Length: 101
Image 1 (cartoon, rainbow, N blue to C red):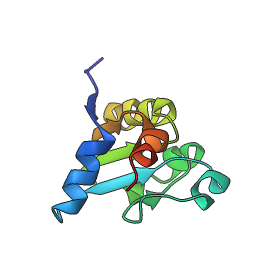
Image 2: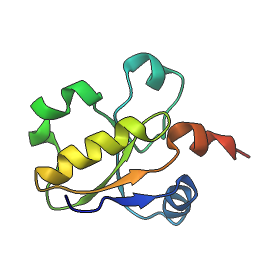
Image 3: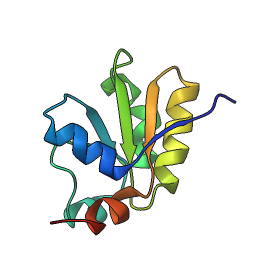
Image 4: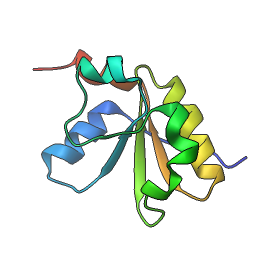
């Protein structure tokens, strides 16, 4: 199995602050996303990923986000196995929100 690339929440924030165009996919459930998500992120629940692959552009790299980084890791491996370029955001939204100013 090919090694999965990772990105830290700090790096994601940096890219967004620099105005970089990045693709974020939040794979949490509706009620989790209702509590707040990264505004730039698309929301596709983990269970819907297999039937919504056609919505994900194979030509760009995607950063996969969940609550703690475990579900997103599983989704990232799944997408990588299907030919997508992905990175897992380690620590998930728990880590992303930890250092809020």
